Length: 424
Image (cartoon, rainbow, N blue to C red; front, top):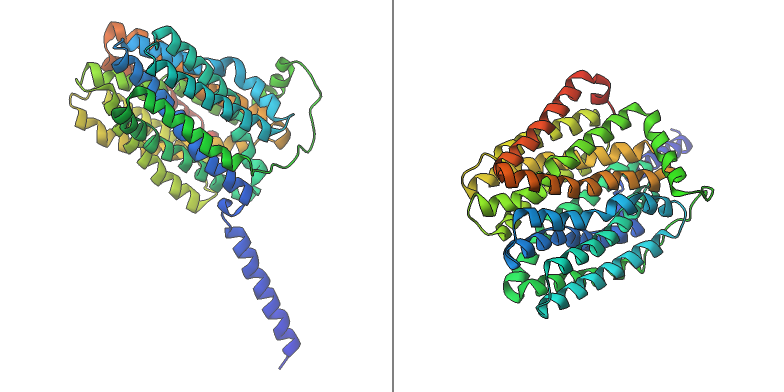
């Protein structure tokens, strides 16, 4: 018998179990990530409700055309083109908590002002465009900061799970944002839908006020924004896989994303003879699909061949979008958006995870500024372009055509770039 040796063995076993528990510790066990996530739920609900409510207001409230809807969505997203790169540089230099608090308070004020305009009967097309620009400006500044904070608040081995948990906040917003805004709007009018957004942003502030963020490890030298952005572009250029990934994201930002998030609303009204607000149910079903696949990613954590998973998800999403443009009945859209949502969870988690896992922390804000520019800044350009095309060839043909372009490009890349398939 060797009691001492037995004690050593038990200590080693206990240490191993403790290490396993630490390894399995989820990102929501990190208190400050949990606070950011809780705030993000409110923030993303409003972000998705905004795009829906502004489009609904234009199509049904002001009784304008799909090209006018595209113009307002363009106004909502156009600030991203001018502000996200600055926001990324600010995130790498300044107090990120202060930036989030300021932008969220400003966004709430814009929602209050828009609600007052509507209730007073002065919500003309010009006023709506102005409100959309201001709302888009606050999101354009806040979103890169929010995304850059995730790697700073969790351990590296928790990163992909944290991104998946964050994706659940995004998908909850896709489900809850348009649906609740529609219910509130039906009950209290369009102004009520904007009051709902203002109150939600105010409630989310409670989590930001308790958020603590680690200070920057190092500050970049003060230079013009173009030089700050060049650093991020050099990082992407040096990694050809990330460069290709950004090209694919750019393509999606101009085709499938605006086709589904914007043009589909006009398609439902013009070609399926439904109210534009009925697209809220479709977005909710899509959100459920994204949530399901995001849970899979969250539970599995670090997965192999993330590049292949991302591209396969993009191909499935493009195919479903092609079929959406060919539907003749409203109910036919539901299985298509459900499948697209299941693919969307892998699309969102894999592309953001690959970018953040391969970007050093001092560059994170600027790279996520570029990422936000691609995700947010291109959508309004795509929406405006597709709206103009739809006025000539019809919304269904436009949706299908945009998705055919996307499917062709991503399939070609998947076949020809084996290294990208094995990335991650």
